[in-house]
Image 1 (cartoon, one colour):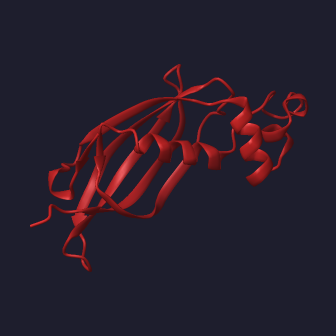
Image 2 (spheres, rainbow, N blue to C red):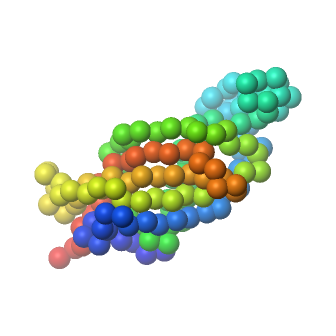
Length: 148
């Protein structure tokens, strides 16, 4: 893994990571702790839900996205996350799915308050093993500049 700084990230820069294999155990455990709905915690009850089976909570998919960011071959030199502009859950994530992250710089600007950093907007797309988009989001991130 190589850290890439604000100065070296052009609009259009892309980095990809994956796969991350989602397990039934982590869906159930995460669901029990943070989103205790039957379609996240009970495989039998989940069959009768609108999903027709066990599915991962959206917050777990977001956490998996963060894990995949740490695996990017060229990872931005993050100083802080500044928020999300959008986050869409497009398709259920199920046990056994393999998730992949594609992160692309869509915009960047100098920070007004920190001379050692810039603000970068990244389009994040999580796909499954069938290349189906399961989550998309635009994240704003404070990224370090090269040290002088």
